[in-house]
Image (cartoon, rainbow, N blue to C red; front, side):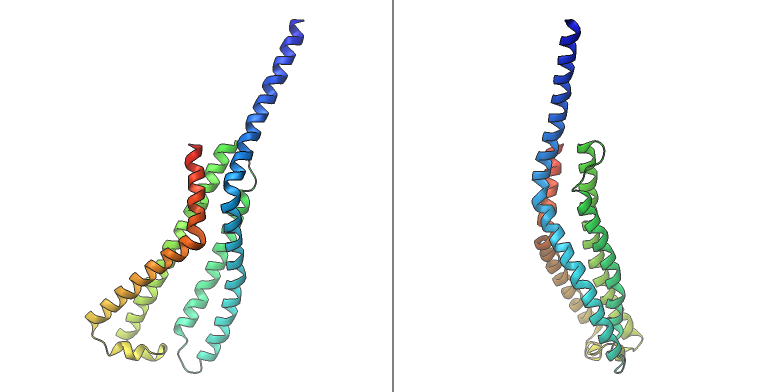
Amino acid sequence: MELDVLKNNWKTISVNVDQNEFDIISATRKGIASPLDALKKRTKKQLMILPALFVFLIIAGINANKTGNSFFIWVAAAILPVMIIYHFFNLKLINGLETFNGPVKKDIEMKIRKLIKSNGRYLIATRFLFLLLIISSEVLLRYNRVDWIQGLDLLAKIDFPLRLCIYAAIFGFHYLISEYTFNKYFGQYLKKLKDVLAEMQ
């Protein structure tokens, strides 16, 4: 008799544990489903657009070689494969959040943090590359390579202090635009994932 009671209690405990685990997975999946879907769509679009843009830049670079104004085109073409690789691995991170391994809570937290950190680094990297392009323009001016980029000869006629103000204004404008576009296409969904993460604490 006592053995039968013990067996029934064990079955009840097992069901409750499984149910709790199921509730955690269901609630979390509902919370992250919408932002994950949006991020996946955005990332897939990037993976379609960037290779097409890369091909276009290669063709433009070959044509621009005839006039000697292909420097920035080739620089952009060199950067694009890195961006394509980034978005490919970012898509893998997003897909990884659709399945759970090991302890559910810990696995979700780890994957969300990894995705947020990856996108944060991407935003910093794009700003750094833009700053590098500005510095490259000034270096070309210093070494009288104005023929490498169309229109650089016009910038050479401007005094250096004024050029610095122009560079600062351009970088500031890029900073604001990149912040806005990133938040519109990625940041708002990452914020939702952060909120899910905060609720799990």
